[in-house]
Length: 349
Image (cartoon, rainbow, N blue to C red; front, side, top):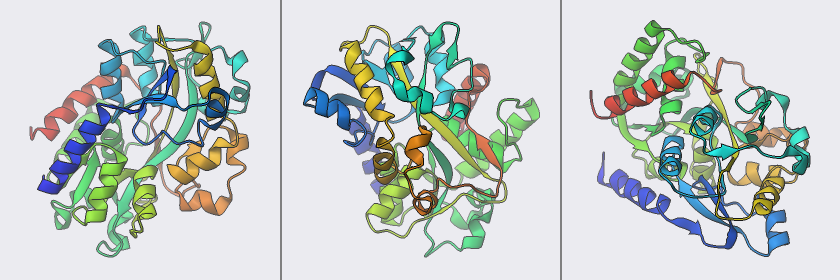
């Protein structure tokens, strides 16, 4: 890891340990860095006269560990594969969707799991979705090189690639690269093949990015030419005027994910404020702010209908002609095994 990458990683860690915005004391939102977008909590602020207070994290497992260790917040923003873990640990309580009118407008595909809703209630409000694909510098990387995920193991790019410090995303990449497009039914042979591929990819990694802003800075600096990236990392670097391309159609495919909010038990704020927050977030008008500022799609179908098709395509939110691995909830034991193996790989084992 270069000095620049170390400095960026250190700055990211410091930023993620502090509340980003000490505002309304009656709602503490535990969220991904970068999601404090005014357009998402606009009606909340209009009603309460202030923004929510935010505290940030950089990945799902970090967030879960902090909450499981006793950190108190009112709502948190896990991605779909984490919800069963929150439920099993008794950290969350159901939402009353009668108080969330736009819940009915969420695309049914995002709600289709007994982990999210069962006889006990609705445990999860899916809010946003995105993709993970190849971000690259087209001035230095030929387009044909990124027509395959094997670019991440190509010796030509040794020391010039970056992967997310996220077990789910790197395993989605490794499964796709080894021919698996459904991680809900992974065999031992497929797991081992993906792990072996990740070890090869590790040899090319300049750094594992901690959050999309750090990834954007690494690509803007020129130290990293190719990254396995979410939409927001590409969106941020383009906003700064750098010509980064986003390849969603390598022959092996790319990945999709979605995230949402859980209602944490015994939060320090007011329950009414949590509902005002989620209602602001999934109203149709929030879609434009989400697409513009972060590059993600809103789960509210009425909201996404307001976004021009060309803008969806430009942000990487359009349809593709390639396989897709959907990061839906998978076997919790497999996920824990993937997490442990990823830590070994990063350590060089």
